[in-house]
Amino acid sequence: MSHGDADAAEGKLDLVPLIDTVMLLLLFFIMTSKFTTEEKAISSLLPTDKGQLSNPQTKTVEEPKQVNIRIFPAGMEKGYQPSEYRDQLAKMRQPGQNIDFADFYIGANPLLKVDGKTLSRSRDAKAVSQALDEVHGFVMKSLETYESGTGERKDQHPVIIHCFSGMSWRFALIAYDAVRAYEATKATFKFSGNPDELARMREVTFAPPRIRNYSANELGNELFEIIHMK
Image 1: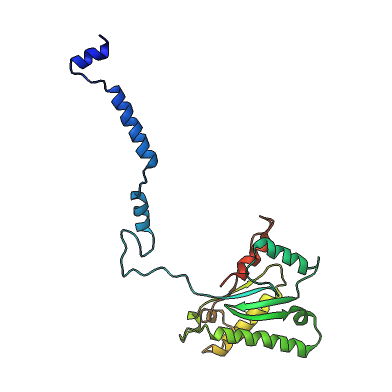
Image 2: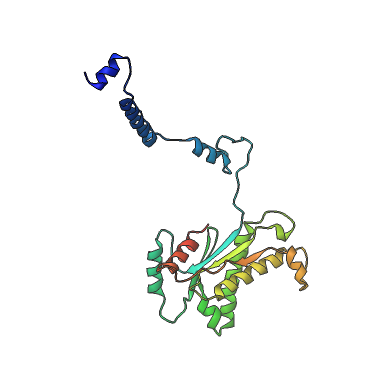
């Protein structure tokens, strides 16, 4: 009689196969089960109206409102990838030369093909004046649609000017002058030159420049972001 038969005759059980079976089952359930407790705990802590701690009266976090003025090479449209914008830029820009024509957008409002060459190098004062009047008129008409109705200019949505860095800075300065000219027509006081009065005026800033040379498509990436910005 074997040792196992003797244990069975005495009423003893061999637990080794049972332990092996339990370990295999445990490994199976660990590998195939989905634990959702941690996921639910994380979702309940996120700033949203969903999750275990959701409150029907909780307000969602809204992005700060601002008015974006976008300036990029004339003729470029939405729907392309960064590498395609880079190739388009290479075709329209000659080595050592600036891009002379730009498209201005305020939200979905376009002012197509601003002639920077006329604005910077033309000796025809009348042509320069007409070109500036066109930009100022476009900016004033577009900003009028963003008026919030409050009396204080500092409470209006800030204006951010996004000018493609591969273009002349004169386009951004022209847009800035146009915004300030519009604000002058809306101001409830006459600016005397005191720096303290700037706190009462609308915020108008330039978007910070991008870091260069960290990828081959950097110029295309910048164009993609500006063109697809709201």
